Amino acid sequence: MSENTKVTAFKAWLTQNGGGFHPQASYIQAASGLGLIACQDIPPDEEIVSCPIELVVSPSLARDAVSRLLGLQDCSLSSRQWISLYLSLHQLVESNDDPEKCLKHRPYGDILPSPGDLSTPLYFTTEELERFKGTNLYGATQDRIRDWQEEWQECRQLVSQSNPAWGAKFEWKIYLASATYIGSRAFPSSLLSSDPTLPRLDSDNDETIDPILLPGIDCLNHARGQPVSWISHSTTKDNGISKISLVVHRSVSAGQEIFNNYGPKPNSELVLSYGFSLANNPDDSIILKLGGVSGKKWQIGRLAQGADGLWKEILEAMTDDESTNDYEAILDASGALQDMVKTSIRRLPAMDKNPTGQSLRPHVATMLQDYVEGQAATFQSLLDFAEKKEQEGIALAKEAGFELVIEDED
Ligand SMILES: C[S@@+](CC[C@H](N)C(=O)[O-])C[C@H]1O[C@@H](n2cnc3c(N)ncnc32)[C@H](O)[C@@H]1O
Image (cartoon, rainbow, N blue to C red; front, top):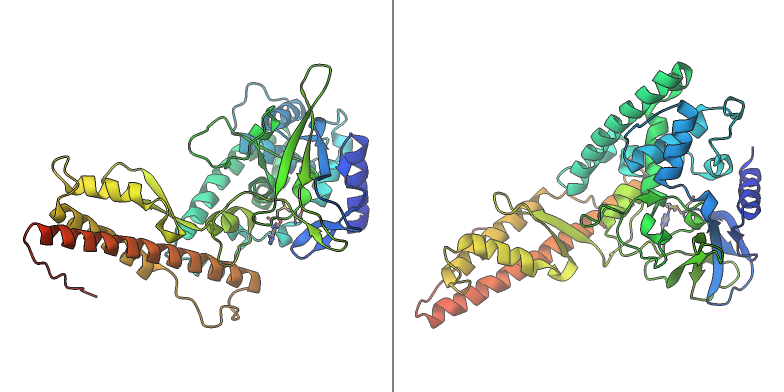
């Protein structure tokens, strides 16, 4: 099937099921892969795309379909595993071998990017990945490979027990692509509530949020700050959700791309889960954890946003009593923070003058450059913060009658 035929079939499937695209929006090749382009001027506040509830790929839909197809009972897998397995089975099982039509997302599966078009770090060459050594992203990629491979082994075993021929075909690359689709296209299940919200899917504080796939709505690329709304439509009958739609509040001129807004995401997350980065991304952040203290992870943004909590924790670790005004503790804490930040800065990968050199593909070089720039700028802001605290400590010492001269070791 050609690319156009697949897109036509997908659009027809979406429409037949009660969803669809704006009549003036075409799903075609855009600047970053497939995207939605306005064929004529579209006024603000128009519904751009909608996905009927029947086509939403939720963990429960996936679990029910997979369990029926494989004859599983009371099987426990994570939400990501159920959805990944459901998507993967679309590739492993021919339509003829699925007489009950458990796998009902074939037109959707056909328009998902091929593995060759996926660009998250799990698709980097070894040499490309090595260039990220010294960053949190490098470690996060290694963790993800290990975790997803364990998930794949577990799923493959289930498939093999049910149908050895399907199990034999279930290679790592099939699970990897499915799990990558979830990372780069999923929305939080909270959108299905009557009061939709867009929290982070990896949010530590809400374990009730699952990934869901919204065919059609996930066809839009991301633009930071784009004003959009999520509308969940209720049925008049039982007040359940009938469809989810996306409304874009800016007008779009003919020929322009229509964007979604994936929310404020740092490049660490954009690269790891989506395979792209934004230059000078204002949402960049670093994650720090103090060894031997509470184990809490601190997220610090550019301009040292969020550093106050981290500072308080370091300072409290340096003081025996409740006093956080003790200049010695302030100077110790500031010294510890400066040492920690300087070590992290030194570990960051060196940026080539010509980052699009031969060893890296250009899109990987761009991600490396954007990501390292954000990390370096954020660490530098934290260093400035620590130096300011040092000055405050010196001023307090002076008030107490001590003249301090701090010598810089670097
Ligand atoms: C939900 S899909 C968006 C539609 C997608 N282009 C497609 O082929 O269906 C998310 C993927 O689109 C690409 N993408 C989205 N926004 C982008 C952007 N601003 N710059 C570069 N790539 C982007 C990335 O590959 C990302 O993983």
